[in-house]
Image 1 (tube, one colour):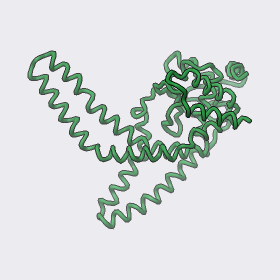
Image 2 (cartoon, rainbow, N blue to C red):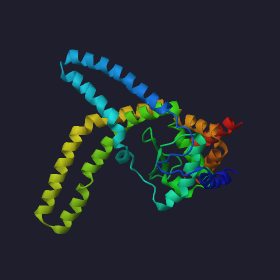
Image 3 (cartoon, rainbow, N blue to C red):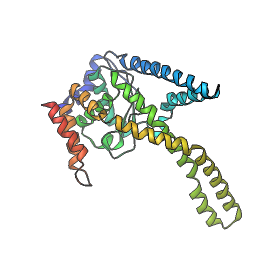
Length: 295
């Protein structure tokens, strides 16, 4: 049984030597495919950006080229903002206890190492893809799934980032994180205004309303500055979502190849059965596709 295999992982660890999680270095041979693939993507992007910068420099000497390279630099650095944009965090004590054995077993089974495991607060089954070396799992999955089902979901999330599949994940982060980051900046700018207004009403003093005015002015200035970039980033995010329609199927296929297909089907069907708001057709189609893949 898959649950039994997950439970046996700690005993195997004692026999073969220590492993540490997360981030972990389990036994197995790490693959350099992901790093090579991402390096190749950055190289291709560099060539395209240089060509665009040359054209922009012809229309707007110096500053045209500088602006193109500046935008590209921001896209390359976008994954650094993933923790703020996605709101992920380290597993707490209870989550770590439930995740450690399953995560160790999945990494060992996949023959990879060095991936960091984080938690995203969500009631969903699957999480986001923050970056090429960070695997996210939802808090709901971490706290509620049976060990075998949890291992299958972790294998699915790892499947997004293994080998050449790290390329669409990297590009997806580049395209979608600016949208998340700018929305986070807008929320951060406006979030103090409402609490300050409530305090001003309680105080009944001019100083409170002056604080509201100053905070509102700062938030409005931030909004004006990021409105156009935020709109462009949102449009790019929608485009990336359409282009990445097959991402979940590819990750499911990777989990099946690792040997977690049956448990992944069970986890998806368990989610369907306990869905509070009607029949979730995307999950139903996903379960059907997994069953076809398993034969």
